Structures are given as C-alpha cells and as structure tokens.
Image (cartoon, rainbow, N blue to C red; front, side, top):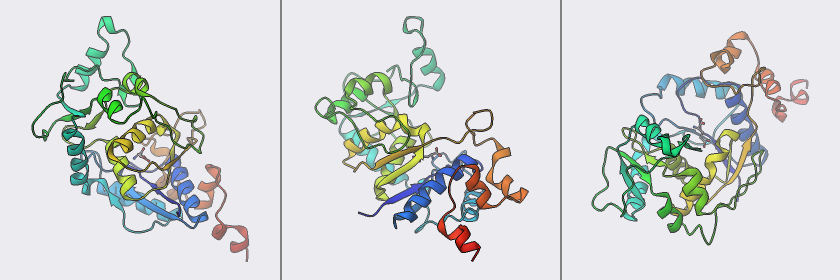
Length: 299
Ligand code: GLU
C-alpha cells in the first residue's frame, strides 16, 4: 500500500516556522516514498477561519516548494459527514447532550471537595454534570454540545479485552496499552460536537483521515496525547488506524513553542525579508530535497 499523508492547518492565522517544518516533513516523506501528499483545511470553526488565511497558507506552501495531490479538503464542506457519524454514536447510546458553559465546567471541576481540576488531552476533564444515568432516547438534538459517555464508549469498544495501542514512529512515547480506566479517568467525557460548530476536532480528524485514506499521520508532538482518543473513535466507527509519527516541535531561541500569533515568525515575514525556501529548511533542520540540492542548482 502506498504511503498517503497530509498537512491539516487551521486557517485562523499565518503559518509559522513550526508549520513549515510539519508541512515539509510530511511532504518530503510522501515524495521520497513515491506516495501521496494531501492538503486539508481544518476550518470547522467558522468564526475564526478566514478565506484570506487559507489563501496565504496555500501561497506559503507553494513558495516552500510544496505541491499537494488533488483538491484541498475543507472541513467546512463536510458537516453532513460528521453529523451522520454522530448519529451512529447517538443511536448506540454513546452520546448525551451537554449544556454546560466552560465556566460551569471549571466551577464544577474545582469545587472544594474535588480539589484542583484535572486536565486531560482535551482540557479540564468533564465532571459529568449532564451525564444521564441511562442513554437518552429520541432524535439527536441539533444545536448543542454532544459528549461521549466514556464509560459506555470504552465498553462498546471492548477496551477491557483489547486495550488501545497504535504504532508511533516519531518522538512521542510509545502508546498504551490503554484500557477503560485511562479513558474514563485521564480523558473523560469529551465533546464530539460543540454548540454552533456541529462537530468537534477529534471527530472531524478521524473521519477526514479515514476518508482521505491516510496511512501515515505526520504532525506535531503536541497532538500525541490526543491520539489515543482518535484511535478509540476509529474503533467505535469501524475505521482503520493509520501509523502516527509525532515530530519534535520547533521552538524559539528562548525555548518557547512558536504560537500562531507569533507574527514575527510567520513564513510571510521571512518571505518579505528576502529569505529563501532553502533558508527556512536550514532553520528547521531539514535537508534540501534533491531537486533543490547543489547538484541540480550547481549543474
Ligand atoms: N489542525 C490541527 C492543527 O493545526 C492539526 C490537526 C492534525 O494534524 O491532526 O494543530
């Protein structure tokens, strides 16, 4: 099976050096293997995604020498797909509606008897305020958050018999095996739909990767802790699990992770300064691809 990978930025700001590294690494890996490299825009959050940022991303990637195969996938086009998957989980009694605000969750999770709120890969672990004793019946509600009942989901996925594990080829710690307790205690009832968004990142990413037949997910190590969630969702939805390669994060001189807001490090800024794609490759520690190498350029 030939290697298929992707780069999936959110068009909510400029690409920075960390994105350049991620995109170049995925692209070079696909090209070296004679495989496929796809571009996907994680633009689920319509209030933050902007067409101008999407255009800038495509321009920066092209400038870096990155080519993608086939059309760009946009999450904003795929809401019916996400809602259909949610309906499957709803019908199996694995979801419940949640009306808590972020503030409600913080307050309930840090109530005196609870101690300091526990954090999982998805933020504060949901304290279970809206979780029903028995699965809700009737049609799936439209405009509210839907949470995964993790205890039921872990049972439905058979985690006590077959804990979650997957292949990690990057810098992240080897995963698992992760049984039901990991998911109920260290992850909790994550939201798979958010009010006003229709779907949440964890659900969208597993459906996108499956529909694009991604064999290798190459992305930053910041997403390694969320990967067990993705594999659990793949199990529940009967989707294949790709190989995961979480790469090192590019940090600034002070050792801080580059945030998207750090405009000083935007690729567009380097372009405006007259830096070359080869300069950026050197900055993130990637070799020049053969077609940019001295043999080609120097004749
Ligand atoms: N859109 C995500 C980000 O920019 C990447 C998601 C992924 O690669 O799975 O962090």
